[in-house]
Image (cartoon, rainbow, N blue to C red):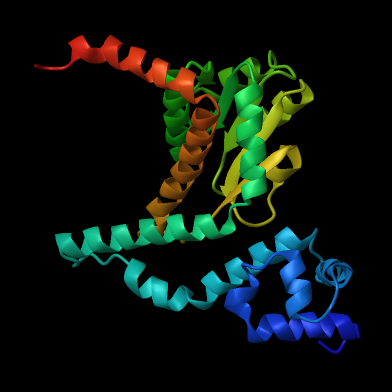
Length: 273
């Protein structure tokens, strides 16, 4: 605080005294409420080592989650002697929290950019390893139903060799909770070098995957051990995938309704009467 300029001190004091409200303010509202200017708010972000105001809002959201971490862990820890109902309740609580935290963190402008890129692309290539490959497959199935060619190979070598054939008309989506999965990063890097628009879905925080991503979609950071949070990361990733799918579907509403009707009819005789 002592190192801040007078205007920066005003902003800092306002945030400290109004932490919950501050994370939801626009930059204009922040400047007004702290009795400063938009330029001062931008300088304040730079002083903190942030890229801009959106990063400040994300940091405030993360800080809010960390402040309530002890309370959440009490609900998330799964013990060997827990009853079936208790396990169910703890898993549900962890998943619900992961969804809410991701809603607070995800940059809606970046989400809109990703939806726009997918809507305009010719095909999608998806990269994921381990648990993230399951999320990638879910995305493949969804986009295939609305007639957007989507490709997901489980084999890492095939992922890389297929990425070589992408171009500027394509989109590559890499899913990695840690943001450090080498195979996924290599796939996105190759796709980007070929001109494709690259999108990553990863937990909040600095990680190597961001260096090869044109658009980064953050999910909430969750505990990665024997807690409900260890599985909640998948729920958070699926939330982002569903948001992308619905966003594109809304842009192509008339065609999508027809595609979904056709796919339902194609599967009709595969169900028991």
